[in-house]
Amino acid sequence: MLTDAAARKAKPQDKPYKLADSEGLYLLVQPNGSRLWRMKYRIGGKEKLLSFGKYPEVSLAGARKARDDAKAEIRLSRDPSLTRKQRRAEAACAQNHLQSVGESWLNMNRSNWSSVHLEQVQRSLEKFIWPSLGSIPITEITPPMVLAVIEGIERTNAKETARRVRQRLSAIFTYGIARGLGASDPAAVIKGALAPLKKGRMPAITNLAELQEMLRIAESQPAHPVTVLAMRFLALTAIRPGEVHGMPWTELDGDIWTIPAERMKMRRPHVVPLSRQALQVLEAVKTLTGRGPMVFPNARWAHRAMSENALGYLLNRAGYAGRHVPHGFRSSFSSIMNERHPEDRAVIDQMLAHTSRNQVEAAYNRSEHRERKRDLAQEWANILFDGFPDPMVLLNKSRR
Image (cartoon, rainbow, N blue to C red; front, side, top):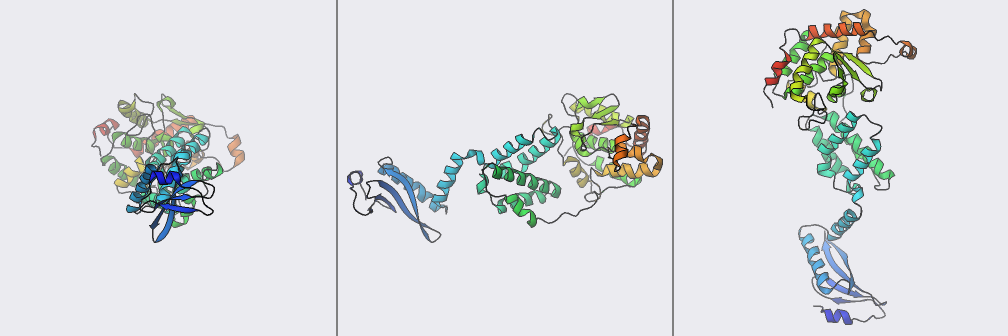
């Protein structure tokens, strides 16, 4: 075995030579006088070499400690050279961890997105991505690693969510590449490995009797009262689900709900006249959420919007997966009310915040038809929830 005195007295020669210690550790003496700690080892049938620094900056005892640490990695079937590289990369480049890159990407987009969309994107990453991949440098994340996460989301029957998360991951990797923090986009590579979604119109029940039956079954399911009340409010207003999820109390003024442009899909403010039944829903939910900022908040965090999947999961538990989705209430309202009042097609389209395909008509048709909208909203509420219990009854229902 090598001694500290022998290492100290080692003199350079015309060619490099080794002073062996034990278990693959040796001191390489170079012709220029430098003395370098090296260790030979085998893993996977291949001989490899580790460097532990210069002597005397790294003492004999220090080199032996590094050798023992490397041996421990080998016993666990881990290549110590890769482990060392990964640790150095993590220590030097914490900014290229996926979560760090992702948060920088979120900050870049903050001013371009609505607060509701920003929160939905952030929550999806916090729930599905950061726990498993967030602490890994983006240069170390492989397509199989991403695929495993996305397929895990798919297995919960959330295929749309899985694809949205993949798209968001791909945007993060692209951002990282542009910033010089990464070199590839493994989230884009896996796109072809996912089963394609069936395209077409969103499932919706457009028969009034069947729609009422579906609502009764859904409201009988064990669920948080806020979720059930949000479902009823969504059905009454036929507004897009995201606009209900992120609804703050400040947007309400009596029987008028005014949604600002930044929360609307078409980036135009939208005025919703509320029926008597919709106001009753708000009165009921206010007993649960009135002290917070959100009308229908997240079940865990009162200051956050309701999960974008909560209403869909409720319909799925009621047995309507593939038959009706939260967005489908818009088709239900449009089909049933247009059949009853074909002369009010333009007014019904305005109630749905649809943009006219005729650009001239869209530019010059400034008529709000507020009174007619109010009448149609009340008629819809009367026929849809005829015979249903008061919303206050839903406050006492069983929870999951």
